[in-house]
Length: 183
Image (cartoon, rainbow, N blue to C red; front, side, top):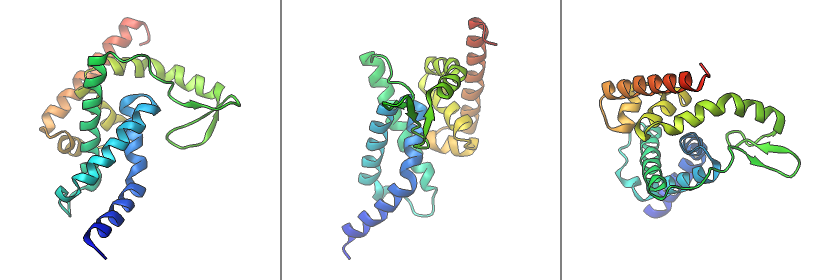
């Protein structure tokens, strides 16, 4: 077996195992499925081209998450510069009044989704108003349940900085919720 074939086989296994996790993180960061697919695809391309730089014995998922966060940062900067239009909805709607959840791939009733979106929509809208660095920390800590140490490695900054960003993000969200009358 050639080195290229072996690399391709290893990478295909990586995509099977971590592809859905990368897509889920991209979705949580980007807020819509279309952009998250683009981000995840870019992440996989970068991971493939940089696979030789991965150090065996280190945390592969953290390495992939770091790439995902960096691709998202680029995406957010580009979106901010271009002042992109409205987001596509959080779920993809089929023709039978059901929606397909990107995280699970299961069909859900639109009434239930509407209730969930109403409950989560306010916080998600406010999270979009956070700076990229603060939003990334909230997503990794609250939605992905990552420990501060791993977040620090992913972001390439000290743990204290991660905790500070988390505190600031929570305080900012709390103030926005108070101002909007939702807290």
